[in-house]
Image (tube, rainbow, N blue to C red; front, side, top):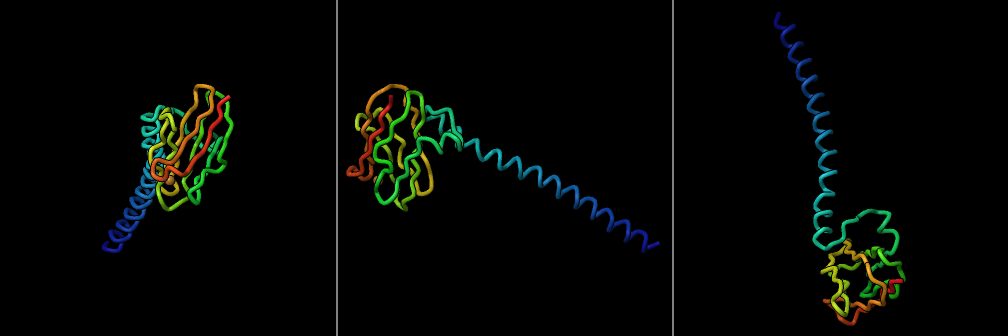
Length: 138
Ligand SMILES: [Cu+2]
């Protein structure tokens, strides 16, 4: 009799454990989806509704060794430019005419701006004003 109770208890623990494992898997998937939410909210405050790896690959400027690379980038009207900081110090991409400002971007992070008007936009880093770059919007 006691053995049956113990075996029944073990089976119950295994079944409950299995259910909890799958529930946990489900919630961790949800968590990874939710992690995209803050970046979207952040982007919206910067008036850039679109995010995504495809957009990042295109029109990407890398900030490394206190340099914007490429220093001059040509894009089309309506396109988004993404700056990714590879330096351990923070940098920004700030328009000389203040028409856009990514804010200070930490190491490994990105900032972006969508250019809706044609023109030549010279910009600099607000932390290190000697860092300069140009976006040409056609
Ligand atoms: Cu800088």
